[in-house]
Image (cartoon, rainbow, N blue to C red; front, top):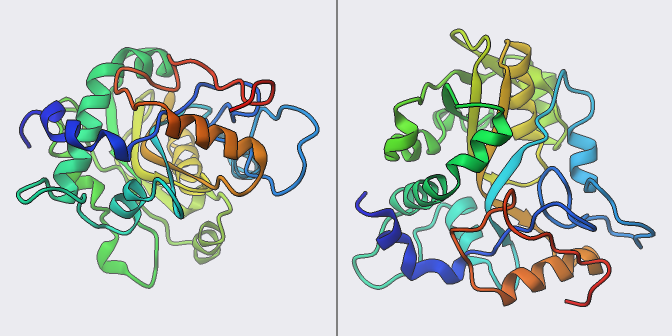
Length: 272
């Protein structure tokens, strides 16, 4: 993979800083509320996280995105890389998608290992990824992030693929509808007492991450912290989300800052 800083430095403009939890910023996924209605008070959790953290055995309150991203308008490059499986737009000879994502995770993890460890309540004992659960594409049951994590030295030493798609059709259907269900995943091998770093590429509704986290908790995991490359946001959903995105877009991205140690957006009481 080479030096993570050297690989990612030319692409800083594709990233957006993720704010710490605060007024108008979800305390779970660290993005705007995403409600398409007027906000009467600062919400602690966005609509998606309120929905996807409910109804499971146990959810993780710790979701740490490296960056925000958007599907439309300004800032779509990271979404194209993560969700549309495209390589980064780059000069000739730039990194492929896997190398870019591995370098992104490696650089972020190196800078914020202490932040992630505090969230877990101690050193991690297991790193694992969220598998694909789309029944119409079984060949992709093993997520590309398996390869990506295997390229990151600090993660690969603890890496063990313990999650597989579950066999409950109703649970997989709920997951496809962005509803959490821990039956959508099956845990193999012992995870009792483990502090798990759960890695995924894109956080949309949170159903995948929360279902996987709950399955790990049900199997005996002690702590689960989700590390995701990007949190998809919709700046058009409401003025609060628009302010979060505008502020993130106005700032220069800094790998030395994360949503666990960076400043809160404070976006409800200050103009963007």
